[in-house]
Amino acid sequence: MKIESAKLIVCSPDRNFVTLKIVTDEGIYGLGDATLNGRELAVAWYLTEHVLPCLIGRDPFQIEDIWQYLYRGAYWRRGPVTMSAIAAVDMALWDIKGKALNTPVYNLLGGKSREGVLVYTHANGADIAEAVDSVQRHAAEGYLAVRAQSGVPGVASSYGVPKSGKPYEPAERGLPSESLWSTEKYLNFVPKLFDAVRNACGEDLHLLHDVHHRLTPIEAARLGKALEPYHLFWMEDPTPAENQDAFRLIREHTVTPIATGEVFNSFWDAHDLIRNQWIDYLRMTIVHGGGITALKKAADFAAVYQVRTGFHGATDLSPVTMAAALHFGLAVHNFGIQEHMPHTKLTDEVFPHAYSFNAGYMYPGDAPGLGVDIDEALAAKYPYQRAYLPIARKLDGTLTDW
Ligand code: CS2
Ligand code: MG
Image 1 (cartoon, rainbow, N blue to C red):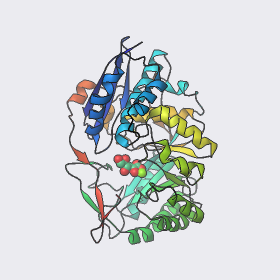
Image 2: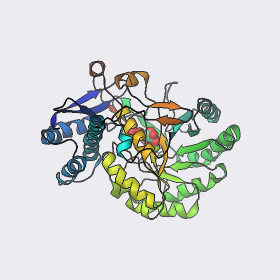
Image 3: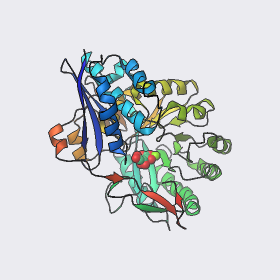
Image 4: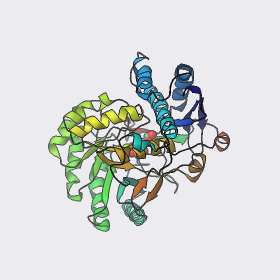
């Protein structure tokens, strides 16, 4: 079998997605997600101009060799654009191999380690009462794990809280919007939020919270300690992770479990965090982390240190990544949890898929390959539109981490 052609499909059904389609001389094709929120066209152009011409004529079964060719062969290593591009090729090749062998991708990764993939979803509200209500509604839908975010009094447009009753979607069309941030108000507020949520929802529901890289290590340590009575499943991205040592300090002060890594693009971004056991869950996911091939190695390394997977699964990760993550999560032994922020109905129509949700778990389905397709005619009706993630400023105007 040989790769005959490859192309990019860039579309915007409610939000932007970059999808790679690799076609073989036997008519089998594979899909890969190449979406990098707010920087979509950089990856599309990297693939079109620098990667796709090198793939034509290659054997799509040689996934490891092609991964190394794109990683080592570029000379310039890592970075979200490069690694998302490599990931898209990698996903498409696993999809092709599954289809060619007539088996779901999870069987190529070692087979099922479990029957379903535990997922968590997002609950949010403008204030504590709305957030509690939202958590309860998601629990009633069958979710066993729910992330809770709430507007912080005195801080306009908090992270994770939707505007004007729409579902929460971090990227917005047009130029970047600005939001405000106050660490002091946030730190005083969050324990009250979880006190209310835990009291209303009982002990069994898994609760999660995303700090979104906004605290210093000592501030994060204070938050982790304050949240201990509510036994969170995890506190996410408590502090930026460029300096991996920062997590040591948090760890020394609190037993609240820590998840990080949604912005990582290489195993080396997580290496010290894992081998020192400063984190409990790795958030790096298939599309931004270099594909299934790269994440399998990272997950196996993490397994040795009892660190589990907790992959990013926001709406900017297309249904192709969602499917890849579900096959992965069904197979690897040290799976922890998978984020599930459902896509819009229109996005689901553009990407028909075999995966499904039932009673707190997701199932990749038994279709050969990844089990996701793209309706190209429908996608063509929704062309790319420039969109950005917001930026954040402190109350005095200083730019800070969003
Ligand atoms: C996030 C996302 O889902 C999460 O945990 O932190 O909302 C993230 O901000 C976006 O996916 C960025 O593209
Ligand atoms: Mg997050």
